[in-house]
Length: 301
Image 1 (tube, rainbow, N blue to C red):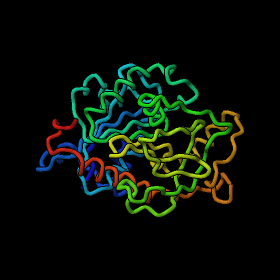
Image 2: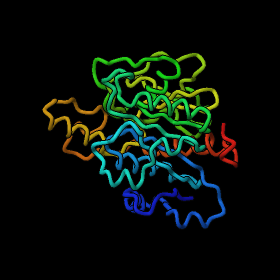
Image 3: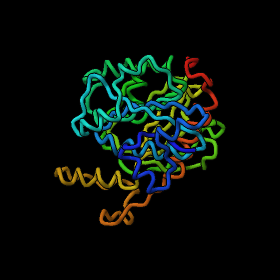
């Protein structure tokens, strides 16, 4: 089944070129199906790129998914055209009375700041608190995961001596969990961060980790709140673009680990994580959203 998106969303052409089944709103309303309502709080500066990455994965399931892009009332992005924000994003104040089957909170390039120093921190806390009673399952990614753990449990991030940057091998610790159903015993995921979470409360479960990159997936017992510290949604060339950006800044960055063929940045990197990325998002939508959410979205609690 397709993912339902606005007809003129920039991601539409790219997804169709990749044979991802997308459906415009005008066609979707003719189907007698209640689609899953998924809200995405996109905190990344490259919003259009992040939209495409997430929609690609959400659209690769048998379920019809209705996406709503959310922006913060307290933050005006500088790297995304205002026309795009006005056309496709809704401010949180307009949707906070709504219920959603699922919620995704992305990462953000603010990990060098203390959480309280992030100028939209209060509003993000409001969204995290709101999600507890208005969303069936919430998926938090990278800094978004760190922020949610800090808000809910007071767990602070730890500054690392060097950046975790590259594609790392991970081990499945809880293969019986629906979120990891069908996973191989080991799998690859890109990471790109200067901070980590080390102390996990006993009422949460560590589902997967890497010897080099550390904890990757954490969940509560029922999968209502899931925290992911890697970037399985990344394109094959995302780390390459970040590396090129830092080189141009004169930062002399190390090569991303286990990424460029022969460790040669002139060679095109190969994706080694796409299959498990698709499986992860499919499992989340199926087991923690679709099979857990009530038919009447207003009954979500």
